[in-house]
Image 1: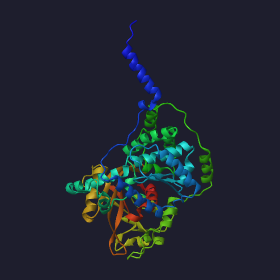
Image 2 (image 1 turned 30 degrees about the vertical axis):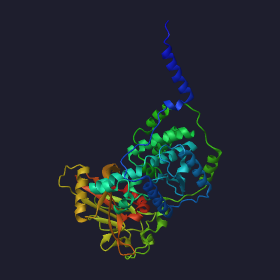
Image 3 (image 1 turned 30 degrees about the horizontal axis):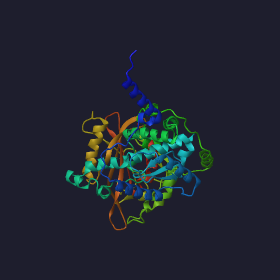
Image 4 (image 1 turned 135 degrees about the vertical axis):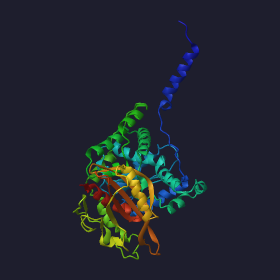
Length: 464
């Protein structure tokens, strides 16, 4: 038998390399490079500004709290394995009951106490945190904002601010990264990227990456009142568990770590905590007074929605609403549901308007009819601008569209200038081809704290 010495030598070299450095043959997810107008410095600055706002809006536990100290140590360990730009990561715990987590541009990561309570293992909690770290690595927030800016800015101006001045220009366009921001809600593509990169981060830290997809699957299975907000911010790309398993299969087998003693101690500690609900947080915000008394005399105690709901029956729908708000209109007319002082100068500053819209083409799709409605709304309010892309939605089994808008509020600040308004348009198509549409309204500074109540109202809506 003839022996090919050269071939055997090559084989021996490859075998030695694989034994000495198995990671050479592992799949590794690298940061993607999407269109982004923000420099790294601007990204960090945007995140720091949003973090200051979050500290004012949310019940963030102090850094001295044992739960926070544990999350910070775990976050530091996980982020040390994050590839690409070395962002100044910080980790915070929000004393909130709902299961949720979010990451701000440039490094700040927030984990709700409810998420820690819901995690069965340390690996599941690490999975949530690795996922959020991956959103920072992939710059999903500023990349999403950059797409919106590109759609709104003239080409000449766009070319002049790319890489410099994007942050100030974003502020002028009403784009921010505060709590509840549209740009903190992730697309399914962004979720896929975060899942895959998070898999590698978990693996390198010693955790079984399957725990991440298991936690998300658990939330989808349990549903109820605690899961939907997390899943609305982190939509399932459709094959989450399969993608994670495929990525893990490309990595060298290893023995994964179990729960640490510190995790078990923290789990026992949070089990005795009673974190605030989103509604309780919103009630404490006193949103109407967040910038001081306005010239319209709106105060937070007048605006904050009650946690108790009552029902309103219209000829075409039924809906529940906070019992300290009022219904303006009747069962056969357009309706506004708002706090007494939320209606200012014959315009709605806080609340929701509900009405019917009949498109010119009775056979128009819900997408076509919604865009016709948007054109009509812009004619009556030229300042109204869309943020991002409209999304599909289902309410009570009925298909519809969800659109985020920015405009001008009837309220004024202390200097007499109109404040920026946030509008959330939801349309649902009725059997006769018409639309029932809702516009949830609040000043942009307050929308995040009111959104849980708005979402509760929307979930209660039933068409007749």
